[in-house]
Length: 98
Image (cartoon, one colour):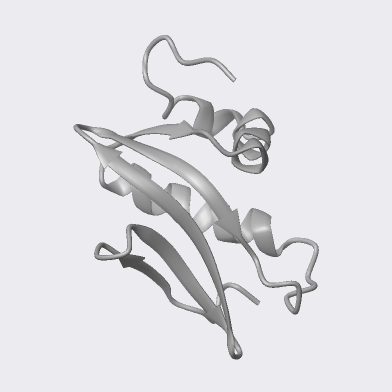
């Protein structure tokens, strides 16, 4: 489902966006120095695929990794994703534990 959609980094609204059919899923962020704070994830209830949020977060983390930024997940659901994915734990800034 996510593979066919395009991930957009909307700098103006400070959010990652992915459009599935007519529904827009977003992850809001705040960028400070070399850190990106992922603050909120909103997935429309019309998107019922159980794996969607995991695939969406994977795309976002891959793009953040390419930009060589540290990640600070402030949203519980995003922090849970990081806890479950060891390779993304390396992206946490020094001293940040989740």
